[in-house]
Image 1: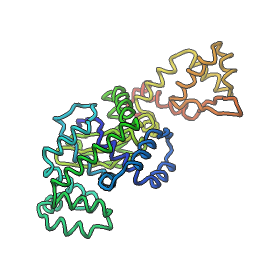
Image 2: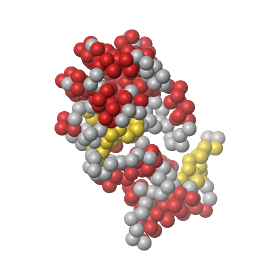
Image 3: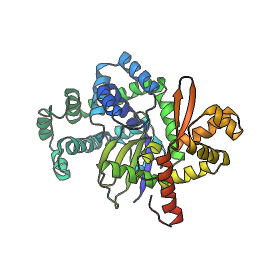
Length: 358
């Protein structure tokens, strides 16, 4: 299966709108997760700037995009317009919408009818050919969509030029706030770093993990597009199947995703082996296997400085092999013996017994 991975500034905005408009629900969801959460300082800055500068049209578009977020993937330019591991700029997306807004509107409506109202593909395609059917249906769709979203969809059907202009201008305005908050820079730097670390093997492992965890039924004969977003690391979007591809959105928490595996991915095994190859770190494992120790004592036992031992310990922590525990003003470390045992078992299966199981 051909896998393409990339980012999109439009999707970053859609996800940020989810944070703005559904913050309480997101907090409840996030608190139920078992992964570490980074502090969303710049996202909170964006939220504040948005609330201070929002207008009726901007608010309407933000609610619309956050509510139909899965279907917003249909607004992205075709693959011919960008490269693998690139980030599709908002201006590229707006230019694409400007070029074929009528066609995009139909595909967007088809997707919304499928994802929000459980239409079959054939029924959705037939439905969007009849404007009267669409308007009558949307006017009675308040149980599935909010009033602002219904209103904007009706504008797309009845007054496409007005809707296109409103969408373009609102996106440009909110993108200025996104940039001012530092979110554009943060997202770009983070995604480029993640893409640089993605070998073909690791990408396949991550996709397999995500598909298993979310019960995605992937079509091996259809190209797969994985859109990575940074704004909400714990937030993804369901698999969306189109005629020429299947596509989903995932947060840039690849290391956390790999740690959710019942075993260890090949990438995690190789990274852990590389870290343990250092004699000082290997000695730390041996020492901590006996008992927990403070940083000062570990530095003394390994005959290195505190800064050096802290560096070694942070690398071991990245592999989830040690726990950092604070006690008053001191910090001590303990060995995660169960995880180490699991790692050794996987290593034995992969390299000693000649199995490719992970």
